[in-house]
Length: 343
Image (cartoon, rainbow, N blue to C red; front, side, top):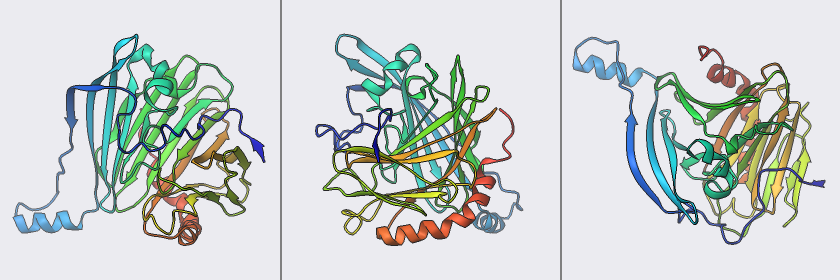
């Protein structure tokens, strides 16, 4: 094992460990405007009310509701800085999710990690819990190329679909060195989310990092990561990175052996298709934050994942569930993430 030297996941800070009580974090906010975008379901059925009800009951459909708002944050010595927030409410029929993205506006976005998002990208999960970190569970960059860290850029929101068999939206980060897109998709009737990260930069290495707090923010902790080939325990306060064998490892479970018997919700899983990653490394940061660092290359490099939020299981049961899910995941990933019209 070796120490992490360039991870965006910070070590545990005893002054910021528990974040649920103050979701706005590090400043005073004032809401200025709110805009809600909602989709209306159109049913292809007879005008008879009973027939319409039968059609609606038999139709598998997911929905997406998008709310945009502008806020301000008071920063000592800098006055009020404007923030844009977008909240995505997802209903698959099997699970409800609420995701959020927030950023300082334009040039002030370079201050996102330090002043606004606790080192994260600003794109995170609010519901069913915040264990896929609410201030940024995913970040990306073209490794080694300055100015491509999405945490310091403001994304444009692009809606793909708000109703139907699948719904989706993009966060588009445009930079001088290229563009990185984070795509989120949900399938009707499924309990997972699907996330694609792709770049347009002429073949440089696309680095993607996931950050989570499995089973919550209240210790004591004993963070673990499980995969096909490895069972990786934290090393106390030490920050460590452990490579996975991408030839055999196509999933990882992030869990906590101390909490799994007493906390019902929020074990975290990732599944990816065989052969899609060049490298994948488990990160344990101070027995608190944990995650995955993955990379690949290509003319248009892309990484595709099934994002799992596991409830009501022991860690042993969750590990077996990930093993069982993994063989069918590539087909579901393809169904969710492929075939969208070019944007």
